[in-house]
Length: 563
Image 1 (tube, one colour):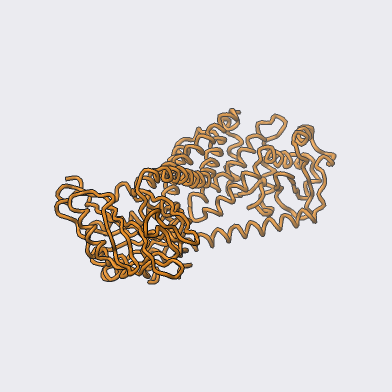
Image 2 (cartoon, one colour):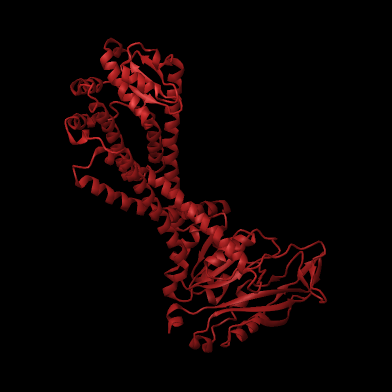
């Protein structure tokens, strides 16, 4: 059950973290596409790079969102460490029994697991398909007898100059079956041609020039990037639409390079495209070729007669558009998500109680969030969403109890529901959640030595091998705590710190307020702690006197605090 709870937590965390950046990307992509489609005078180079930038912005933006969240977590962690010097250390080593982690999953948890499973399955299927096609390409490379492209004696002078300008040699092979000329590989580019083109050197050089232009512009690398993005975000229809159009405009961009060359006949080049159209496509997912999408052939031929598309444009301007769209989209995705993450708990009024075990004997720390009225109970989804956006490496589980289950477990204070947040057992994880909830972090407890830690000149221990356990759980204290009318009317809220000794019989001795808020809250908290009973702490198997502190939180509803 713990494993399934962890899976549910990771699933919910991922969905609640990812949906907003993806929505922002969708809106921005829709606006950019509307602008591109609104005018027929936009150069095809701009069409190509703008769409390529939108595709690249999606994974880049998600990565930026994650990186900024991690960076803010590091800053936040540093702030928490500095704050430890300013506040009283509060530790409440209360062992709480089983909670809803042992109950059935909620509908949202089940839906989250199914949705994430579906997303992962789709991505794994598409990635597996790409690996299979890559294996097929590798098999082709081993069997076709590759040779240096410069060994062909009918290469035109312009093609020769283009080949020698590359830093890496280009390999080449003829395929006996009829295929559309194809290019693949980035570090070691390979061009495959149908053997039928041997008969016509002019057509061979036209097809070769087309493929060499792909190599010059690193189109194979961008094609692989688009393919991987399509696999990762296969569920988004706009990604597929963009990928399809990127392919169209990539081929038209190469066509524009071809038709602007005065030595190339537009008619013969168009005739070659029509001749290659019926031929099969060789592994188009992991390669680029002259007729990757036959449906756009008519549009490509029409483009060859459009004087506007033949006008040269600055390469800097096209890459400036690519960079502007990529960066602005990624920044919008990352910053908007970070702002939402930081603000969610600032608006949520929560009644909290900490449950920290300094001994480290149990494998979790716990916070309890109480719903103080029906209206607030309806708003706890926001709090849960915010908590799940924290990295699951810090949180073990988030469970909600309502109605009789909550009252039975945590007393009448939980009549409107309670959320149990279990963090990892380390102090840093606990402090991250505390600070996110607007509470002061605690100081890391020292590890107990073999002889325990005994207060100097006192007859009690601070840390022992087995810390005292509260009999009846938190409910035994909570049932005696009510909000004082004086504090309510005066708008007083905050935390009261009670320090006391648990003697060898498990009784509370010398309870005192070490930090209070007034308005009668100090007295209420003190009286509640006096009634607590413990199983005594043990050192080397013997019951001993142990000191520790307990925070009691008093917090008004938002309407009351604003009066």
